[in-house]
Image (cartoon, rainbow, N blue to C red; front, top):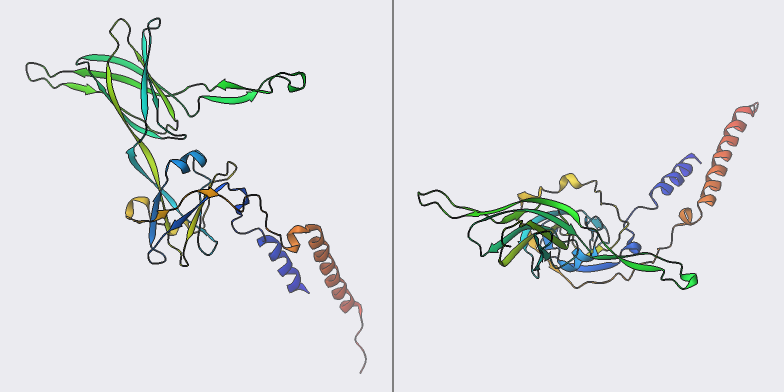
Length: 312
């Protein structure tokens, strides 16, 4: 009876183990060739960055065996394709603003390089950022005909500051100055504003701009059996924790082969909760069975102690 009681207890503790895809919105197949155990990688593209959590905590790699595969993210710097800018000037405040659209949500701009026509200048600047321009917020009472929700501007958040400076080389061989490059760290925003203090000086003439951003490469070991899958799009997900994380190599110690990332599609298992084992779907029944088993065990022990041995 005691071994049965212990088995019931162990079963109750392990019933919820395993990946449950019901809360993930999107999935993409990953075709990864190579020897099982070898490491491969895929570059997280714009579609993933826009649909996943900003901190990428909801990424999950599921192998052909339907088991979760440990992974790590390896940052790289690449051009922000599609980034654009425009100039705004305010004669009242005597400020000029470069408004930058990085092209997609959760962009991580890393380096901004500006090509000014002017040959000599100094300008202090402040950087602000935001991921979206407006949000729907509660408004009036819909029951009396007022709009229930309205668009509200999202405030700009400080993201850094510094000074632009350019000075041609001196006639006596002095070195020139060309500080027109901004390096950012830890800024996640689609939109950026570089606000320059012109004062009484003529506004700078900007010919062009080049933006580079931090992108992430997802690296994981190949599992035997065919196609793996990348799940993402769960705002409530916690960062994954793997008992075997110590067996993964450091991000800078290997050059993994590149796997092929397939097209995104809605997760067909979203909202589908698998049938729970009997012990999970009826936890009170399990407790009753366990208590009854324990009571029966106690009864048998007491009875064996109180029953006198038969004479021979």
